[in-house]
Image (tube, rainbow, N blue to C red):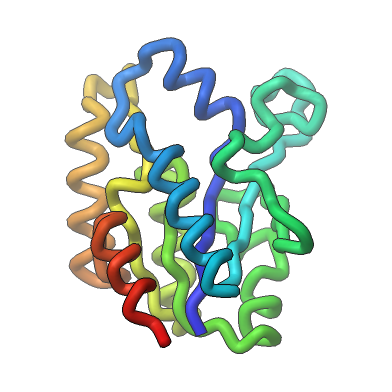
Length: 183
């Protein structure tokens, strides 16, 4: 069985978008919302990953304005929410055990941020034997200002590495079409 996973689409990402930070796929939230709706319509699992830091000064501390989910990433009903404190969603949660218990073998990955948590989650999931698909236009990438690397460069290199060894890359339209063909 396949499941949609939404990584770290929290209000901190919206703050970065609103601030005009150099990014790739600033419209990813609408694509994620469309994918989540399609998965729900077909009774396929939607899983949510949220990043939380213990440092009260962190923008993703539990009490910070950046911690809550963006509207596209709000859990509906009893959809599972995994709270992580590491880059990979597998390293500090029971995500792998949950997937195995539910018979989920394929993850369709969306969210933030391409070069960090999406990258490490996809690599870790692949290493654990899950079939990984990245919906690349539903993944946000940001620049690294201190390095001089643009969001596009980081995104392109990250996606190339993931495609080379760890995941299949798709776009939202292709994934929605594939869902439409499910019986």
